[in-house]
Length: 324
Ligand SMILES: C[S@@+](CC[C@H](N)C(=O)[O-])C[C@H]1O[C@@H](n2cnc3c(N)ncnc32)[C@H](O)[C@@H]1O
Image 1 (tube, rainbow, N blue to C red):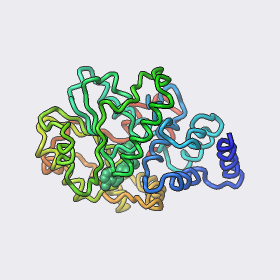
Image 2 (spheres, helix red, strand yellow):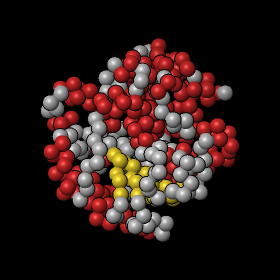
Image 3 (cartoon, helix red, strand yellow):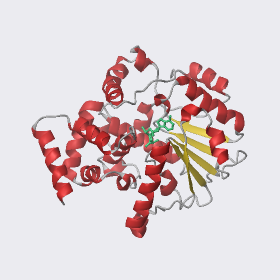
Image 4 (cartoon, rainbow, N blue to C red):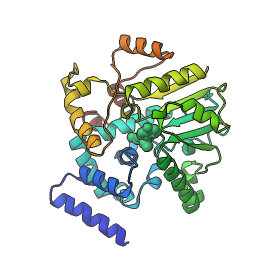
């Protein structure tokens, strides 16, 4: 109860003193989770989407967040306040996270799911291994992240398992580690397939889905290229679903000037936190086709954040709030 009271006082003071609540939240995240980068921030944004009519299905993430973030999510007036501040500052980050989550979830909801292994690269607080476990009983999930992050994730899952057990059955989630293999890795070491094979559970011959969400722009281009090349070279049947930024946002020369304008604030935030965005592709179809051909891959499907919002957000009012 004391904790709830402290949380409420902090939020109230933030409001009264006109401090940007979004920055208060991010600052607290940093205090609470040393060296865990931005994984809590994106998880919180994913959970903040306010409209139940087109909200993503990830009801598990809040259980992995610290208590004071759960207060923000679960107490409607505080949540509304948080959404207001985030929308004002980030031009649609909450919308983007909602549409992105729904889009990447659609890979798991295919009829006749064609993969036997799923690799969640830089998994952070990604919950797909648990949310889709009942639906994809014979699929093995590999969750890859930096050593501290993997440790923390496993610990949080054990806690949720112990504390809530069957209570989460209402969402049909299987919060169990039975089909999950946790792999500690620094992607900059450029040995992703070797690390997977070392687990003795990964089979390079089996059809595999890689999810790379919210990670590639934190890595140097040389690492990104090497990760793609390694996967393409060593696996025959593979699909990589990932998001990526256009390099133009760093060079301040996007053909749509709004894109530059909208990127300034989030770029500043991640930089301040010590996890700057440092790489990107050129989001132009000829360039991308050539790039992926050099990596040994082929583009199957490409979608802009604008198209994602159009497809997955039903709420017209939220569509109007810009996008990253
Ligand atoms: C923005 S979070 C995204 C987490 C998750 N994919 C999601 O969308 O919720 C970035 C994640 O990348 C991980 N990460 C950052 N640098 C990494 C590296 N060099 N190797 C492996 N993981 C890394 C962080 O620990 C963090 O969990």
